[in-house]
Length: 252
Image 1: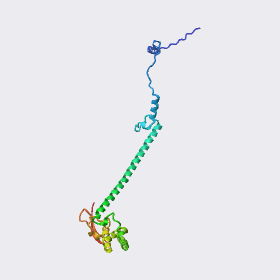
Image 2 (image 1 turned 45 degrees about the horizontal axis):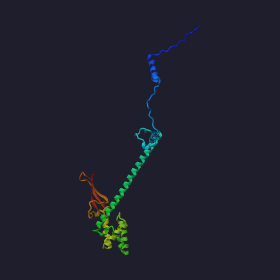
Image 3 (image 1 turned 180 degrees about the horizontal axis):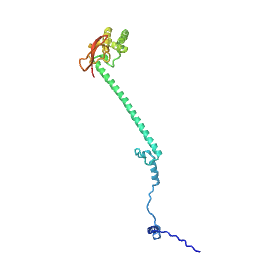
């Protein structure tokens, strides 16, 4: 008994041609063909330097929100945190500099105002020697009896003059006495002078004695009239214990 087992594989002409070409490429003339394509690799020094450059924050280019080339996530987070901290420190330093500059400016302005005030007082001293800023306190030139009398009158005037301290009144009285006035005349003149001084409320009865264009007064409204013009808000009489005057309030 016999049996015939046979198998066949169909190979196309193209596949046969490819196999033949590969065989010829490898064993042409009986020698294997060597692939001479060069592969470039970094030297040890270059690899080390590249790693140092990649890990150094100053050697990494910030891509403005994108990933930093050559850095791991941990390195990138550390670099971002360092940059944020530097920005915060820079902002605080800038604010501190501005605050310091404002303080220095205020100090310079105060010094300049003081210098101008001294210069003005020196010029005023050519007319009134008592205005000389370098002159000693006039109270040191009074006798003990005069000083006691001046202090007594100063206490009395301080109760009648709002906004004036006893020390300021005492100094002004001393200047008048040292200047040659008797104490009674000095008290009257100083009282009238300080009563109408700028920056203080003027008695209405003293308004005619004041030559300034602007004054401050206090009083009670006695009468209101109908305005005679559309631009007038109110018109009437205001009075205090020293007198009364007409007041016109214009619309803004």
